[in-house]
Length: 133
Length: 465
Image (cartoon, rainbow over all chains, first blue to last red; front, side):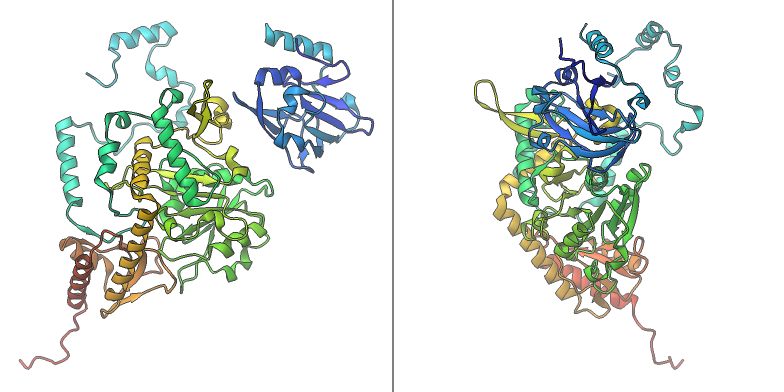
């Protein structure tokens, strides 16, 4: 069973979202997603400063099997990207919620209640469990 | 045996199994207004005998003439061993490797091809080839728009000196994807893009610059200056090159400060004969930074479980069988047989042989130019350095001259009037290493005679009676 931290929010498309104290959010792909993809060989990240909409494709993760889009969970501006992934994409395989973070976003609306379609850990666990059946 | 081995009964069984009445019903989801209806202008089928007769008759039209036409396809010497080996069953029957790793020989050959192309162009990565030079350029344009992260623009600057049919093909392919091609005008005196006259294009946000070296007129562009200028404007640089010329000219990877970003072109001059227009193959190379945006297949060398070298298809994750509509291209295939010929051709020639062919081509083009411009009524149009093609202006209607030369079995050049109306009475003439002194003398003698006939002045003295 994949690791699904209780403190994070999740999307149906397997991104995780962590709300930081400064009002920004950090985004990555879940442990379950990295497990499905297999060894990652390349991560394409957005430009810093790019405006992204909720559900917009803003990154691509590429494994030996497939290249998959990553969707922005919120509408906002890209503040920072994890440059370390350019050379070591396998950080996502090893530590999806820590060193494998992908993007930090400043949400247009800081109120988490306004972010649509995010689920809590329990709901995401159910979703991931269905995949693994 | 019919080509499609299903009997009518089998077809009916299959349709019944999936619950469909007719084959046409399978296409019901395509709205009627999007269907093209019957294909007008496509003739009825022919028997094998009829086709064979027709093709022999057509082939005979092309045989026997001495070719001074280039314009994108070039009459180079091909060592006999090239097609002797290429047409061996092991190569001849092999298509693009779908189950690649089972075809180690094919993969190794493609790997060698890629290595040679990367070395010739001075690029980091080559793919396994594309359909032809024109479609390779279209793919390069799409790739540049995807890959340029500094520019969000879907406008691409393309020099007017790029092959005109390439520009048409690119326009057909990228136009429907919302990419706009902006023509970069050329200097009418010198036949190149003048780097000093690019100010009009500054600040307009283009994703890429397409430049051809040598250009369609055979003249050399200021590739270094154009590359540096485009990079300073945030564009990627796409070089369209003749692979034979690279034996003499600077590799695109060394253009300007940091080199071209994507290099493509027509592979035909590398061992593929002129055969009424095809089949040819395209090639594409790029910098390492952009390899994940490169369309087509790439073969890599690796070690197997026993530590032995082996070849494998690599970087496939963005191809259409995995990425569907988000694939980097609709091309996964390559022109396997022609690449086989090119690889063997380059192996036989070696770097020295290729350089010798390129040098002899240039020398012969210069010899032709020197001889032919001594004639009255023949002038060189552009005074820039050239590779093996030059533009000549004749003091006579071009079509008549070309026809009269063809009657003498000399294909005297390519008329530029259709695509470049400003180049009235101009032809593009090419000489490769295959053209002998006798060929060139023959060209000059026939042209002199034909021109004197066509431009014979009416007699200045009035007849007395």
